[in-house]
Length: 257
View: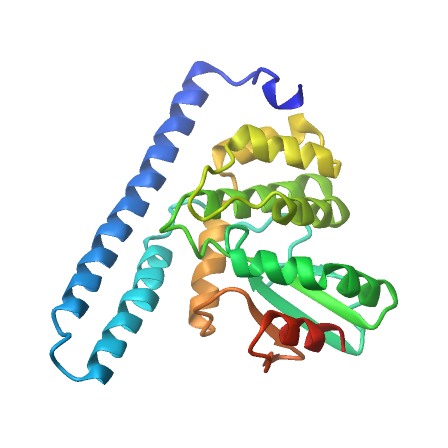
């Protein structure tokens, strides 16, 4: 099977890849530990006002994400070929009367729900020239598992190596095969297999997926989103303004209505 194909990288390359993964996991663990300390600090303030408690929790949730984002990577932020300047993939006619932007995480269950709810209608609207869509993957849930940045990196690798059409198919397959937030989480072989299913060539994408070739770009995407005020996924913008809907169905209706 394709995912079992032996890599031609040297032992030194594999050792370097393992070291990079260990460093990334160490950053994640530091972020988790500091976020936990913030959570405990907020809990100690429970006897203050209810408002104070809520504010403390918000600091933990949002601050924890900003911490993870700001830990970042020392890798270059060079974008994949075909990516937009705003860390995304644009599908459809850029002159379409409606512009939709979706900030998403391939591990986020609500992103998966939105994708299942709106995909067919949105694809039809794009095909008709009524809507353009920009997908902006984020490493938003890196604190849960490194599958979040790994899947975003894999998306960037496929976009760079195989182009927008294959990247869109890979995007869809990632949501079709989305793991639970509790795991188990797909490994690199599984990501390569999905990329091949989408139409990529294994030799073109395996090295970049295993080596986290676009880790710097993925981290930069997270930082840019946080600076733009994005603190949850999915976040949907319609013609530059946040979607007004409160439910997945309402947001989906706005995207294609």
